[in-house]
Image 1 (cartoon, rainbow, N blue to C red):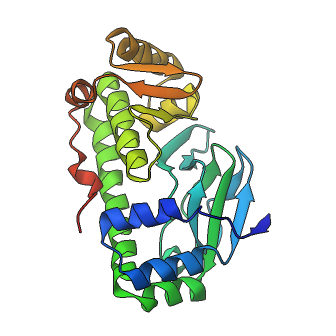
Image 2 (spheres, rainbow, N blue to C red):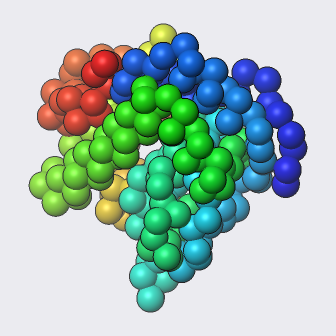
Amino acid sequence: MFVGTEGDSVQPVLRRLNALRRLSEAGVSAIKMAVRHRILKAAAREDLVREGDRPDSVRVLLSGWAFRYRILVDGRRQIVNFILPGDSCDAHIYLFSRLDYSIATLTPVVYCELDRESFEQLVSSDRSVAEAFYCETLAANSIQREWTINLGRRDALERVAHLICELYERLRTVGLVDKDTFFLPATQTDLADATGLSTVHLNRTLQELRGSGLITLKDRNLTIHDFQALSNTAMFNPNYLHLDRK
């Protein structure tokens, strides 16, 4: 649904990109103009794109949560990453002929949609913008490598703790952490599909983190009581996020 322009919704995009590469004043202006050109909304639990679609535009999430996923032929789902406010859904994705993943919303979302011509005009308008989007693509690849390590080498407690630490750092960058608390709309099924666990195992793991006093999860708000201890549990090192690298 096309909804026109959307106030200060561009701020998460500016925060996200500026954390990866310092944007010039001209770059900030160019992003504001481009992002506000075409803003759309989608309801919760709705596919934005599906595997096999032709990628004809770049989408930038302004508010709400989404996720990339794959479905196996027997119906099992794997969430391969979460898309948070400020993230783009793959800059330059239109260079591929088909999508190899689907994107669905977790919550109601507001996003910007830029066709190829508009996006290429944006990145060619200012060097800092081009570098910021390239850095975002590289950082997304780095996050994907870390998720591979999560699934392949960390045990259940380490996986879940690591995911929580990552979400905290990414949300903090775009101003969506209040003290040590952030909104976590993902269900236990979603978290299980992101960490390669059964929902029963995921529930036990969350209970273990709660019981150790590391987190509280209530009414979809997650509070981290001791980030350093949680990081130690997860063996979490935020360098792979490449934040604040100007």
